[in-house]
Amino acid sequence: MNQPTQAGPGRRRLAVHCRRIAEDPSFGMAVFVVILLNAGLMGAETYSGLADAHRQVLQLAENGCLTLFTLEMLLRLGAYADRPKAFFRDPWNIFDLLIVASAFLPFLRENTTVLRLLRLARVLRTARFLPHLRILLLAVGRSLPGTASFLFVGALVLYVYAMVGWVCFAQSDPGHYGSIGRAMLTLFLLTTLDGLTDAVRAGLEISRFSIVYYASYALLASFVLVNVLIGVVLNSLDEAREMEEAEARARERAANDMDPADEVRERIVAARLALDDLEASLSLIPATAKALPDREQERQLESAR
Image (cartoon, rainbow, N blue to C red; front, top):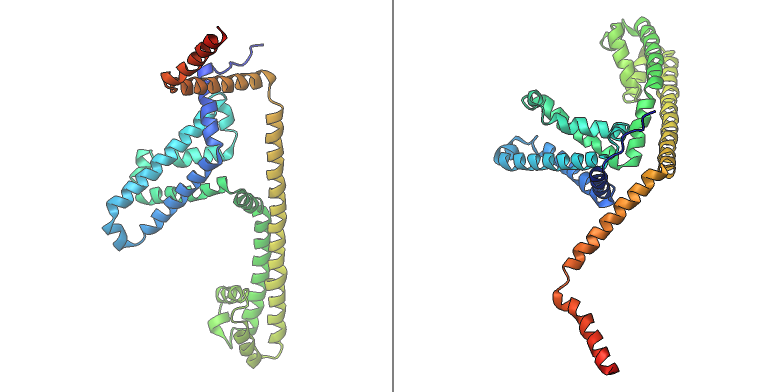
């Protein structure tokens, strides 16, 4: 069986250098600040007067942010120079690469609307640097199947009550219950309990039994169904937190279970880098400082004689 091709010394040295920078907390904080700055620039462009007066400055700032994002992506790619396939195993790396690379595609740059949406997608990159926000986004994604079931049940309840409202109140209150569409819209707005008092008063003028209709709807739609939705989201949040912790443990195990040969190579590369830095620092020492130990030895020899 053929052994996998090992990365050359140059690629390993490049990966160590880039990984040292990319994994530095200050580097992540700097990228996070640039993302927030880019979001602020997008907000400033919504003010027509400010955008017209400082269009050139805003354009330069946008190009500066894009340049920094490109440099960041090159550093992250360089950190995986010794193992390129590992870069694409992380979904966040693929997301970042697509967002940054899309800014250089000609047919996308010419479309102003699409370009603005792509710039807006950069704001979502803050989830990479905020673990709790990443967990929330994962929880939202995992709650979509449960949310779809909730929407189906909610639509069914809304339709049944709208039909009952149309039968009972269509003649007396056609503005709110004149058709199934108006009745569903009225009840949907009552789900937030806003205007429920006025609706109950108007219903009592028609029939005393309308209180049963509105009370049961408020209890079922505003309390039971909403709490079910909250339960679905909280359950997805717990699952997302467990998934994030499992991935962190998997990454830790992968780091601890590294191939001994790769670990030795990384240590050798790190030692070579340290020796190069030491040699560079020694070359900066003045010649007079190097001659001091020799003079001291000569004085000791003379005193011994």
